[in-house]
Length: 259
Length: 145
Image (tube, rainbow over all chains, first blue to last red; front, side, top):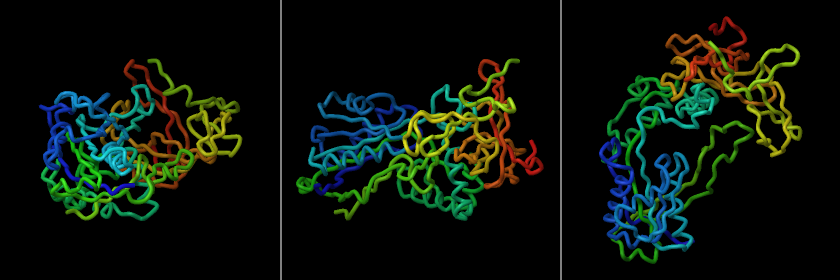
């Protein structure tokens, strides 16, 4: 495995973009990452495009706006982990020596309100059980029960996440919230309140990953390494979700010292 | 008004009592139980699972009161969803019958005994009432409708 570095990153404002298509947003992030790295699109050898509900060939549609480039594109759908999966595939393609410069891009436009998941004829829909807040509220309450977690302590996860949002000028919400404000926000699916649920967003982000041999061409870089094993459903026994393990995908791409 | 079962494949008539039960399956190889019926055992991957009527009583594993109804829900909000562990080992995600009155149902507790009922959850898009399995506390005083 080769040493791998991130040399460029770009993202759009997250929030509502009624005047832009998903492909517009993806291109905006892509061009921002190229500018950040000081590269042209023709330098990119491989593109992985993560999204969930944007139809077929989103990556090709993004590139189609700037003329067909001949760069191979693979679209990645892996639910909530689509973006990080695209990132990991880009990492692997460079680390494995299949190419020297790869890009991961992710873009999404989401409808408002509870995400509509599952097939129209799935009887779980009629029973009101398909919503993601329902699914995770069931797991959260079980976790609180089994491990003695209080509502206040769990709310501090959201406090931390909202604080992190304040550090990013492109974040959808940039407001420090207290435990009280989080717990007093509208209840969505008990114990999860509005500010404990992900907002639905429109936005896109892109990163460019290169092999170590090329580093002298770049002003700034961050080393990247995959840490530990990757898995999902590692301990999913019978039809029971194990609340201590991720459902979709787990890997750790660690950003090391920047230069 | 006509009515229908939410999904015919989910229910089976108890030969003894002639009442509806949940239609599950048990793996003849390892004994694992599932609802609904599936083709392969999720534990040992065995095939040819035995279709059985599942027990009508179980234990509440977890629950949530849903205030923002998920798209397609036929009933009124708020409503309660939970998971019930049956003695066979199957864990059934289900609506829970609880008197909530806009409040969190404080009388529901993880670990409490629950029993199976069938209730009308509301008319579907064609105007047919939809009969659906639900669980409610065995001790009716703990959580009357």
